Length: 122
Image 1: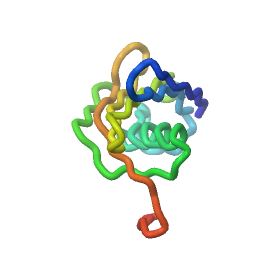
Image 2: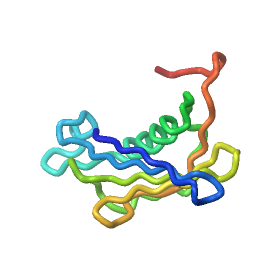
Image 3: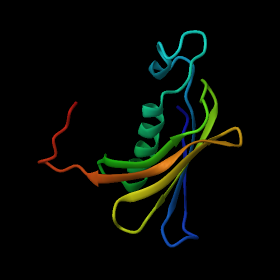
């Protein structure tokens, strides 16, 4: 993936913006679906969470998702623009992903910082 991270401070809470593309040989496309590969929704959500974590400099994990909508298919090598805006200091972010001028995914995501006591499933 090719990432460009920028932050805008012209709003009360910063807006995280990241542009990326997922190459056709990414494991995300393996078997999803032969002959017509599409990026799974879970991969899109992981990309949003990773962008927020990178920008925060913290080790974060998703604790809650809300109003998530997958609105269009994402194919290999499509240029994606991820935007996430913090909603106060609660750990909540409103996010969207755009590709080719269309919104492909949107919703809200709450993240928390991992601690020594946080259980990691990996």
